[in-house]
Length: 298
Image (cartoon, rainbow, N blue to C red):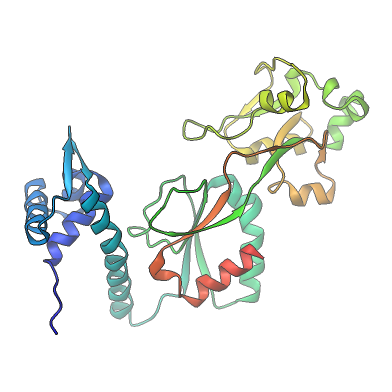
């Protein structure tokens, strides 16, 4: 029985336009004109008998039918691309492409990847540090660790951990401010607080104001202390004795164990979202990926 397939060029144009949200961006990627992309999409709509896009100013937005088509073809085109790459090179790709949010990669993921790689010597990986959202197909990503659920509904997502933050400092800070050892946060001035600016993409990370509110202390914390743009940097400053950081427990685990960081208080506030492992459906059966996921989860 012959396969009932639409034109491949029409599928490629539709996939690129759906992913980029623009005929112009899709045309640039495919090295054709926007008019050619538009014509390919019309051909696919005629073939399927469905309207796939609606226009909003200079962008195109998927209709309900378009979302269904995209969900079906994105994985298929990725599989074809992967197979083509393998056939042309004459080998199967053993290098894993792993994508992760920044501070979590250095503090939490890297030690686990080192342990995994030492036990699975043939496996090599590319570790990419990037913010959400990422393009799995274009960058051939095998596994993504993201912050938050529901970012990639077409992928297989596994909740990894729900982190929490707590006040952390070093013994050197207690030497500078001995009252903090006994009086805890009551003896820590606003000027010694280390604040993490999570950036415009995040709203669910706890702040010092939220931490004090949980303790029942109506303390109007001003940003008189230190401001950093990454949670990893906040932990580094606290470790070096500069002040007290509202640090993530999972990222500080090794330094807490070694005594390089110590809690000023055991009161913690949970992050608004969990960290998740995300993988494309068409790669879920790859043994190398499955073994790595089992290792990370364990």
